[in-house]
Image 1 (spheres, rainbow, N blue to C red):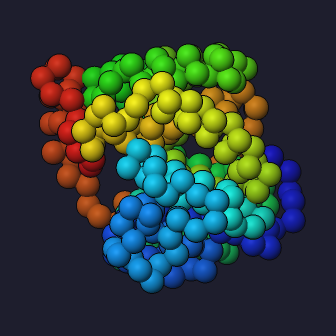
Image 2 (image 1 turned 120 degrees about the vertical axis):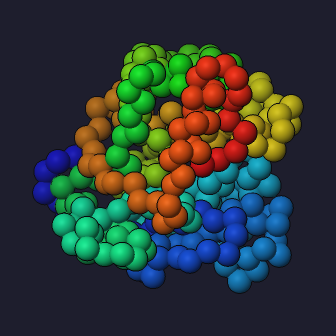
Length: 271
């Protein structure tokens, strides 16, 4: 949507976290302890994803998506979104270049409402792979069979989205990280599209066959379901920069990528 519309009266953005961490102070952000059913003592005073209709006990496989599911089923707001405890959507204001505290560069309610009068879908800026396609990058760093099975599930459950999935696999960029803000109607629509696909994928490829790091493949595969949904529906969107609250070790990340691309070692941890 690109025409002017009434600013939203309520915005709720889940901040998925599994450990104590500094949180944004703006009231639009809702910290949620993910995997609370598995580790109830880690954040006993924080809202957990184990109340109401939830999939908290699947957090070892679905990662931040257990917060997304909770928000979908248990929270009313005009707009809903998801970010991560150390990865946020950043402000576009020029003043960000002069702010040392990274938490002060996170987008705030006032700026966000300005954007939402024009766009009802906001996503994280695209990640560019440059020398690889989305598919080849995943095949080098993880198990490409996970993408292949996801396509099979899409073909059976959501066939209209397969052409856009195939297009994404050949692309050299993607909106990833499971970070976005949407009008409640589109948020519901996206969850209705994505979760049945993931539940079926889990049924066909048991995550328990992997170690704890690779068992989170469902969360990783889900990141590639956003672009096919946007493209197939023809939804316009705005992009916001990805803000890491911690410094990224690009040397470590780059060397791990090169080792994976050379077929020496796939990813063994998150960066």
